[in-house]
Length: 269
Image (cartoon, rainbow, N blue to C red):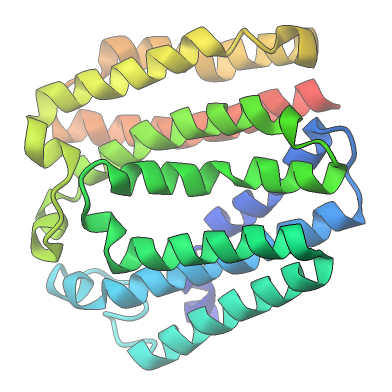
């Protein structure tokens, strides 16, 4: 059971579900439907992670990764069945929530499958797809509160945090991407220009973070300043075109995602 839990990357799947509920909070109404929506996101995100590991099993084995499939803890066909079951359960729950939720869940499921099959091999499209999928949890949660419009800023906020992190992750997995036949941004433009691209995206986010002040209030502004803006300023100085610097920055961006969550939560309560 522990190996199957590892396969779905529980922290990521749970965080996605919690962000779904935050989308409802920011839209003005956390309700039972919001919690069910979070369950849908957890199941589909877990299915996507399991399916991606299934598709990457041979490359992961060559790279000596200790993941459940290449290590032999889970048979590939069992991992595939497990991912299909998670997708099916997530979409079934969404079906009973209503037609809009089912269509949303189905589209996300298809995108996750297409990403693992071939979108990840397309330059830039791969990064944009992952960032998009990671950001759609906010509108999905806001749907349950009846006001998707109020998820616009959280969606953009999340997208501009996910995108640079995905680019940095590509820079740290160039060897694996070459085996997979993937041309990533760091491969094409090199580390120096990659660091500039990451800094540009983050500085764009820095300019946007104060904009919803009137909507979220003083608590949000103070929190986002210390938990997101100051780390962005630090990265704009400390991010160097080296593997070590990219690795440290990728970890800091993960912290900033949690910081962004806290900032939005304080603005929504």
